[in-house]
Length: 530
Ligand code: AMP
Image (cartoon, rainbow, N blue to C red; front, side):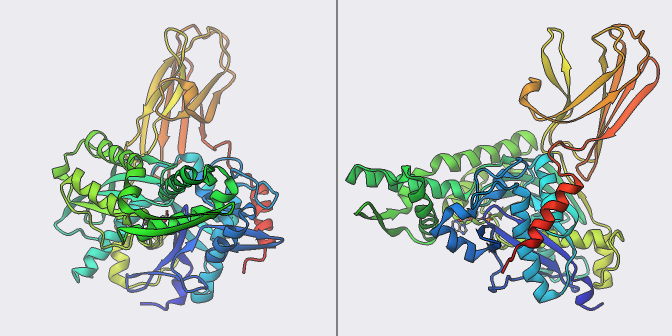
């Protein structure tokens, strides 16, 4: 076993919508969350600008409550878009840059405790598409990390769950075995701004995603918004003016609403006092009223859960051994009650819903290191051997297809790799040339589920050029898509008449160039992040 310092440069990071967490794998196989400079394991994912100073975390949250125009919140919801949804301190920012500032703060604080860190695994919701994943990876690079991998949050949770179960069973010579040999689990992840449900099959050192689905814009924030709306209506009934319609007032009420929500997870009611334009609303908000005002949000998560298990994974609820809860919002009693009703079993809430993802990411960083790809990892020999053999198998969360014309001349999405296919996977299909004599062919790759091409996201293209000018109508062209375990997509197009082919790896349009990355990194470097 080696010193702590030497493997300190590998961490796992849960870059959350509302909270972020950084953790590392200890030489003895436990995972440790690294507290920030205030001693908290959770750092609010909020950035507040004041000149060249960027506050991150709890201080930023407090400052944001006073002046929201200088604050960036819920950046994760905009990952993959060219710009953050609104201006911050009079500037437009890329979501990557804002996320990078949060990551930089985590790095900086953690380094004070464990020494230099350079390599990280960063997690994303399983449901994130290619563009959002790449934006997350870029955020890590701007922050100064070498990003070892971008890992699905439910997979991270499953890894941490398996490791912790074994430790609790004192089976520390089999770190990553699974109690009972095989287990199917549903990971229900409701965070601050995203929601997903994933079915995982766990066997000894084998972590397999069976199906996954979710919503990129559904989370605790929506529950907070409902409280603001509800209180706004109560206010309007009494005083004839609805403060919830005033964006500035909403910004002040939202953190209060979050506080009421958290209290309602423990208590049946909470006293509310709100002031606006000289009026004061005093009432008692009950858990029942809160649950009624948010019932449709919970129902959305219920429908997705049922869809993923029964339709996508084609399992019955009796096949599911465990329900694992991830994300702070699963502390709401309504979530546990709903899951018990749907699944017939109590959810397993003994993992720390806030920290489990970062801890799983730290284990994944250990797996990558143990497989020898990342230099020396000084850990117990038994653990290294276990980690070396771990297989983590993911599925694609969105279908991958090719833009084609059907018989009626409509532009359709010809799916080659349906969603929830285990990766790596490759598929090919033969298309027919529509225009006789065409000398070049462009293959457009689409990500998404819609039948009509226009409703999917174009993620790249591949050209075969300089075809002989005599190709007849209906000449066969084979297209092959290969989806790697790392989430990268390769495409090959073959003119079957002449044997000419073209191949490319898809690079998304949104991805930052090296110069852009460098520019954003210089900007982050120039900030004072206390
Ligand atoms: P995460 O993104 O997983 O850190 O989840 C953060 C979300 O969980 C935020 O919307 C919090 O308001 C919410 N949350 C944290 N603790 C509780 C609690 N005890 N009851 C209800 N919601 C909570």
